[in-house]
Image (cartoon, rainbow, N blue to C red):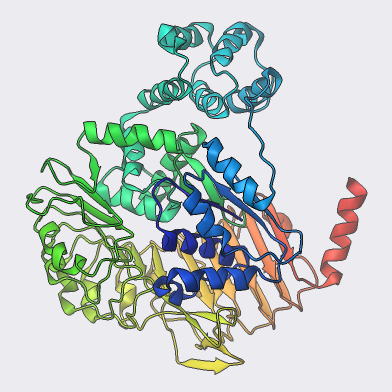
Length: 610
């Protein structure tokens, strides 16, 4: 696992970040009690977690010796051959760390000319050879990068968007000019990053600048960012595409240009979280201020459209007017005084985005329900336990995020929110101890929840009573809710811990926008049949722990765009789906913990063809 010990850190936040990554490695949710633990308890939890393990820990970009000392105490010396790799820009920190642990210090040198050329070609030409006419200019541009990987990648991402014409590349070379004669490497890289920034179309420029609101080294969830961009109005309508699809394309474009880094991916290799390089973040923070897009911990000028508060309210000007504020996001603010201060930020009737994730709040402030232009409301990770009927006033709301709160039921007035696209409400329940069974608990929904026809994501609904079985919590229902087929905007659907006896596909196959369908211990029948003409947009299919399932049939014309199938622990399925040859767009088939009768012939076939 890896972590980042950034320049301004709080020991508790650092330890929580490490714990989050540890639990992610074993594919378990982080216990909710972690949020309220003191630093001593957090260290003990990490030490207990790692005590019997052989681990490799990567601590990236350590800025202070105190940060390393705080982390070192939490690491067990269990004689299992574990290793810690630490990176820093400060040679004194490196020396001090090695002295105490008898470690070794390595000085990172610039890339060799050969390594630089390989990286450059991989980025610009996707691994193919450089066209001969561009070879001289490529070498000249690369020479200016002086073997610095960030500079090579940034320049490569920029050139990859250009036509492969000498005239075009010569213009790039000329634009670098004498300004790059400076010996300051950081100034040089900033100049390259600015070149990439100015080359962006306007809609990507503003999306990139928006990333300045997130803290340094912050791991940004893809879907959170996409929903925020949409709420801010940055995403353009494109025929045949949902706004979420267009926004994801924006993000992929920024990744391809090396302006955004991939932090984590899903099991199928898709981007899950991302981050911004420290140097780039410094640049976009400045640009964001210049264009009055956003500011951090400051209210000195009422022109800001977006205010991000990091860690505390100390530097926020309480006497200023926030009447023109469009967006408020908070990160790591745990001071109880925040409750008495929040009203000054809610004075703006122009607010579209209110992200109060993790705030010390027990209820949704009443002023929130006067914000008629609000599109995005997140109370995730707060102690809010109740959603009042006045939620009906937020007619423009598109995202309501109540994950990891104490809310268990939504009022019928939620059905007035006809523009709601994302309704997120669940938390994990823990039994026995940190490492025992964890189960997602959903919410009781109004019976006509299907009337919200704009919904793209809805999680999780308690569809039946809760029964305890072997320490697990199962949501039991024998048939699908009658309103599910009416959710025409639904993109993702997971059915979990049910007792569906009849084939549920008949109720789902006509959903026009469904792209991901997952079953987790939710169906007790022996067969599933995907009929011709059904699931026209489905791309991903998950089948997990379907204990009674024996066979899968795919008719010609079913799931024409399916790209990925995942089987996991379906013990009675001993052959591939009948009709799998009809899935002409299938790219990925994964079999985990499946019968040998199914997997062995496939392994032999792979070995014989290699």
